[in-house]
Length: 191
Length: 170
Image (cartoon, rainbow over all chains, first blue to last red; front, side, top):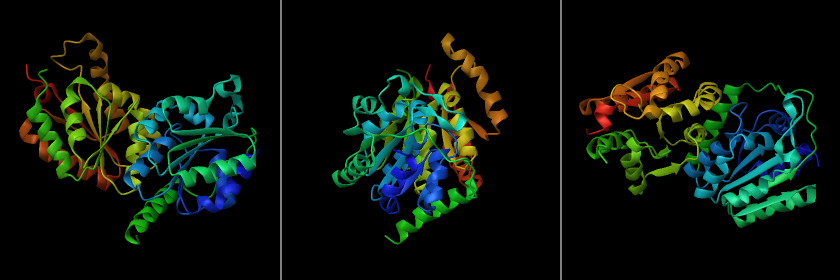
């Protein structure tokens, strides 16, 4: 499964959610499918996308939040799985694209390439719903189930270690940040 | 435990007066009463962390979602948060109100706290983080309010160092 195909498969749903992504391929590919004001791309601070998603989900329980994480990023902040599990916001879906690689810096293998199991660690941390999927059909089904169940879910999607040729996009970081904040504010005022 | 309940309450009340609705924290001795006050307050969202750097992400998310937050940490937690402060809060102009228990300064008896104490001010300076000290209970409410005002207007992290004279009753 290609990560971009997985994101395309759930894109109509993502348009209805508040989305926080990690840097690199995830950010560039989602922008290539189509940027929306409800998408925030965390272009550094590896590991903190899940923490940002938690901060948004706890602050705005009425908003469905989706975090698009990666194996390299979540491995830098495994404690976040325990914090997510402790507060288990019902409006948060945590997707980890696992390509077993630090792709953007040359494809160095991460610990998932030698058997570390992120869904297993998430389950052991106490996240109520976890799964690992390796094809588009199962991924779409897992996402639809997570949306329907309305409980904190971590979906680990095994994807190929392939990404776009460049990671830089024409969306400046601060434009994204202020647009996203304004959008969340408008969602509140328009109810 | 001679951590000052009275002064912890002053700090907590000052945070409430600033409309802080979410507090992230990792326990340390001087912060126990503050964390308990947040836990006992039905209007406060308390997020207990595994590591302090998570708090940068949580506060960033809260800010973009329209909620004011504060971070309670020891100075070693500040040290553990530095990458997040630089690569999220500074990079994206996110206000952070960091309340840092300032261990390892004059009067410190725990040898393991001393090195962090000596590194705290130089790091605040080198990161360009505005800070003030809280030692005198008479200053607590105003300094916290002013720190939060600057954090929000400058969209930057600010720090308040909770001193031994304020937090500890010898």
